[in-house]
Amino acid sequence: MKNNLYVFFLFFITGLMSCSHHSGLYEHAEKIMSQHPDSVLTLLSTIQDVNDLSEKDRAMYYLLLTEAQNKTYVKPTSDSLITIAVEFFDKTEDWGRKAKAWYYRGRINQDLGDALHAQDYYLKALQDENQINDYILIGRIYSSIGMLYTYQNVYEKALPYQRKALDRFALMQDSVGISYVLRDIGRTFTALEKKDSAIAYYEQALLVCSSRNKPLVYGELASLYIDKGEYLKSYKYIQKVLSSPSKKVLLDPTYLTLGKLFHKTNQIDSAYFYLRLCTNSPIIKTRAGAFYYLAQLELEKKHWKNYAINQIQYEELRDSINLIKQTESIRKMESLYDYHQAESKFLKAKILLDKMEIRYLYVCLFGGVCLICVVIGVICVYFSMKRKRMKLCEQREKLFVLKKKREEDQIRLEHNEKMIQCLEKQLEESSMAYTEKEKELMALQKLKLEAENQTLKCVKTEKQLLIEKFCMSDIYYRFHLKEEWRPKEEDWKQLFKGIDDAYDNFTHRLMSVAPKLTMTELRVSCLIKANVPPVTIAMLIVTTPTNVSMIRKRLYDKIHSEKGSSEKFDKFIRDF
Image (cartoon, rainbow, N blue to C red; front, top):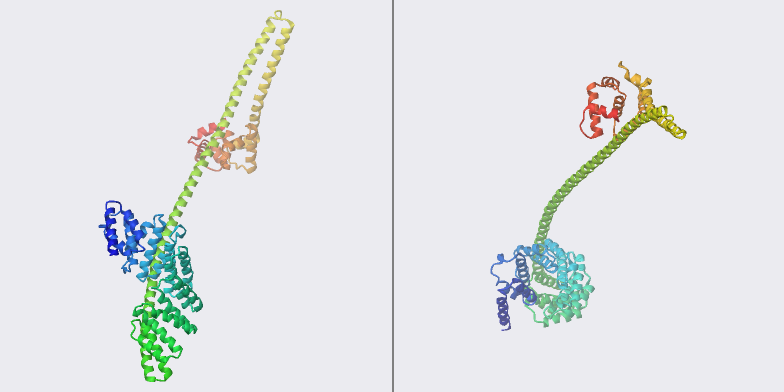
């Protein structure tokens, strides 16, 4: 009656939410999931067309559906539905649902027998553990990883995860989770043959587990105490199992344990009774154990015929168990092989992708370096040309200033001569018109103007004399000879020095404007400055007149950074 009322209430809630967004329905489903997973399945069945839902609502639907089916022991056929939820939540920062989606994908794969993929998904569920506040979920994940390791008989690796699960359940005081993990740790220690530790954990599990689960723990404790030789304690726990309401399938292992106990304590008739009860057990291991101990009893009594019958039954069952184990081992190996094949393909694809990314990175890097080099080259050329233009402008300004000064000096010289003539005329014609002081002043002015003219003439004459000295020099004469003559290095040095003396360090000024001039280009420039004809220049540098013309054009381009003729270069050099 109570359950019917709950279902009615559930459909009433669903009706109220049908006109609103699905998020309210999902929130309600999450709240009742732990206690009523079957009701969640009923609630989800009210959603008509899942494909019409938004991506988030569809992911939530498949996550809740998978969780509810898992809790109600619905056997899965594939992990395709939970994968949709995983792909959505993995892109979000909803840490709890992301972990839960990965966890249930692991559970589905574990149920499908794919332990390795299940383990991988469980570990992915823990990748954001620090962001997750659901400690019970984390405890379940750790517990599931521990279970997978025990499934693969790797018990040493199972223990750390089981202990972490125990810590998480203890934080939330989850008695159900604590009892299951304590029992699992006890089983792990039993497999590791650490009986005292196993007993300690089993006894802790008894303190917190429900009465429904206690018979299983009692039975396992009874078996451990037999192995330790503590038969009274074993018998006490067996009696607790037998006094608990249990199904026959669960009683058969207890009868086997009781038969072993009576055999150990030499109560042969009781041992026979309980061992024979187990020979019809649906559990193959229980039947095999019963026939084994019956064979041992017959052997001790020397009943050879009965011993042979029981031993043959035991060996047949043992072979069947080994065949099952072998089949399971082969299945595990196939699963491992398939997993490694899938991993190998994934790694190959990842390596190929990484190589492509690295190649793309190298191409981008090379392109970037080339671009940077081009930019740096352009900047260097720009500043070099700018510096060259500035130096050329400075030289032109200096030349302009010198020309202007020369013109000013010439004008001043002519002006002074006119003034001197004027003063001489005044002194001759009007000797009575001026006083002695005025005459003396005019004479001094005349002397000053004559002295200034003399200075200007001396400067002009000095420069002219330097040029004339160079033009009269032996080196100038040798370079103007039209007969074949090959100047040596010393001859070129004398020519450079003579030109520098006559033309105010010509070579140094030229090199400051064009620092990358070759020796041949500098020699051609000096020969042009020395008024050597192009034909003679060709003979002196051992080339053709056409090549000399090309050198002059190239020099103009190099100095001015623009196209020009050989005549323009000659004019520039003569004015420089």
